[in-house]
Image (cartoon, rainbow, N blue to C red; front, side, top):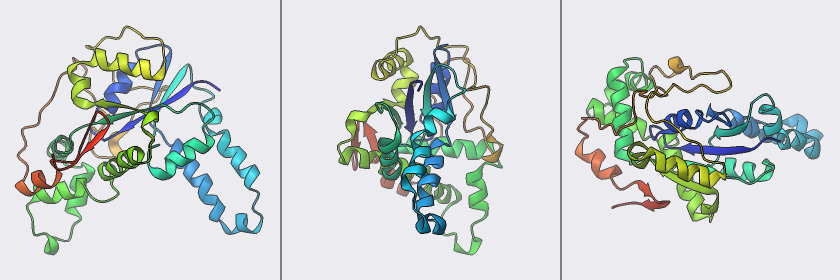
Length: 274
């Protein structure tokens, strides 16, 4: 089976940018957000199906799971670096059970308040952005906060993307799974991309490549590009002229700042209340 490595992380933390840079390397194929974790989850869920319970041929069913990566990526070239939600407790245990090689996962992290601001910037620029849609679908008789505060709560809602990454990273660290992870902070990626990329190559044990950090291209993998119409906003569009920090001039409500200012990871350490 060809080499497969993984990357995951918070939304708005440079996932797409990282993949765009890595894909300059002709030996690498970094994917968009992958469906493979969901495939394994659905196969595993079949063990609760009434037909399976009547005739529980576990070995035959698990043969499918053991060959998922080989089958899914059989037409992909070179080294595959998959963006997958593999660090949730359930998915990570599936990965350890069925992935046939050494597990290496790059995890992109960013300050939660900056993530919220990035989402709100998308809300302002894209009227059809899905967060705006969720806000518009709220029962107006139940709204007792400002619009921006309601949207912040939607972004941070339990079991939504940001919350899932928070508990997943904490679970990985609390359960001694740090050895599988390499953390990349968004601020480091945009301020010193060459150093970060070299660290990623070292972690994956891939031969380094001389990348460029200007005149970038949008993400294409296996001749496929992101289709963000479903999201109503350009969630996966990068700035191509050059890589630089981007700060959003958005004032967050005091309650949001107080509630989420301490929910950060740095160097693989969960910092809460700091």
